[in-house]
Image (cartoon, rainbow, N blue to C red; front, side, top):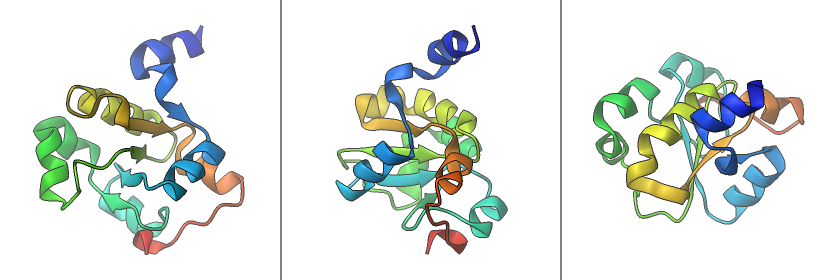
Length: 123
């Protein structure tokens, strides 16, 4: 039941696990971390750009523009702690980005649990 509700809310075809997310990053996906700045500063995927969910909800695609994100990129991997906020961000950006918006299922917790690196501030 929970997976059904999650797929209704976040779109099951847009979730990527850590392995597929790494493949997408290696293929040029931009990583957008939607956590709050203090969470992002503590540890993020290398190269990630911090655009908090609240900004995306208020400004939509303009929040990405403001952060200097190339909105013409072929794929966007949205990331948060557990995958819930980034799922919401995917939903908020779906009209502008369509299928290019992907969610890291399980967020940085899943990423980290597979031994993948997190760096302070994504650097």
